[in-house]
Image (tube, rainbow over all chains, first blue to last red):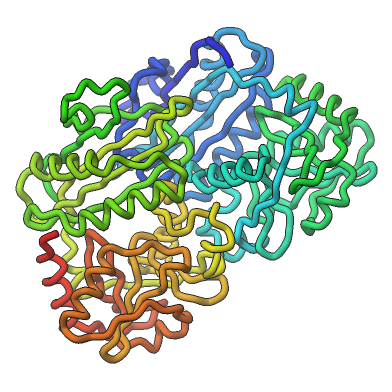
Length: 295
Length: 295
């Protein structure tokens, strides 16, 4: 990886603000401890996050990420995050970090220390791992049942499907299961047989000149990178659609990708042990477009 | 609540142990920050915990709690916890805390700071809230669908059902949903109609002279307090059974409880808005037995 030093800003709504514009956004030593063992972010995984990709110093899809942070807060009945403060912290962290080709900026807000009612927030910027190989050669993916029906976000909102929470132990366990199956990543499927999303990505299928992705009312995250991919597809005359996609359609698709903020568009070269051709040309164009985004 | 001061011990496997028996178990200021923002316990809810009740200075069901911590570690592919170290930290925390009638000791182990491969651990002791009212008058409970089938722990182990993880955002959301429905707590049900568990408790039904609880192979936690309740029931000549329990059997049971470490046995006085009689006599005997446990 890299030897450049990570950058950490704490984002805190001060209990008695004194009017100092920077009171709520302070750079601190990333190696030092900053969290209480009673923070509900760690004792209950009770918080939300976004991971923002930065390419050549430009934060990509910053506003969609901030909007999604606010949406996740709403789903968890958290206080409304001060998006101006988070925006400022993200930009300050990018500014404070060494110049590197690709940076990953994690933006976190927790419910705070139990009993205080004051949320905890921070922004952590670190050089991103090199994703060139995943973007060009592709990745091996397995499908895993998430156990929930595809309409569960409507019927059981307390399951928090569609919120980007800190409670990611299941997503991590799914990635370990993928590793046991000699794969790199996962596509979750619903218990009633529909394609959902990856643990940290969205699924995109190409069928002829159409790109399709699962509809977000199926308890999946609205992808910021997926939205950019659709923007690009529309700009080159492809059709795009949000759909309810039976699992069998993965095998019959012309090409498949997992798209996410830091790795961007990773073509799938193996699905459940079966090798597939990657669409090298479209993958290269997607990568060029995604890395070149200026907002 | 109380003004007695919480006690915090950090449990750490030192990178270069020097033979000092207490090297891995250090008392620290509970008000100070001790965790990195890059600890996977907070960034991914990737860790496990136990909450141990202490009555009149005696840790209750300590060995079952430690055994369950090790079981959860196994389910999450975490390193095996050093149970002797955690046991020592729990006892030291109890010893260091002011004498109070009831103490709650939270024992946590995370996957540690990303990239280090070294787990983070701590033991936090604080005076427990007064549960007298819940134990005598009872609690209002609603059933909520957890969205998963009752056999999902067998079919999809990556969903971590049956592990006590830090990824509890859904459990917290379920409790907020209960509050919206003017209830105090929740019984999760499976998507195929069986009784599972509470967000932080086990369900017990009395049918005549039999106590029943859902079988643990349904992706639910093996309850330490539930086990004690069954020990007591057997000692007074009641029958006990682990069963697959259709949701409809809740309404027809003679009495219902949610049992957990700190609140102990809380009789259910209202289920989904319908008032129920509580079994005051058995509840009182259970409370006396549970609070009197000496191990």
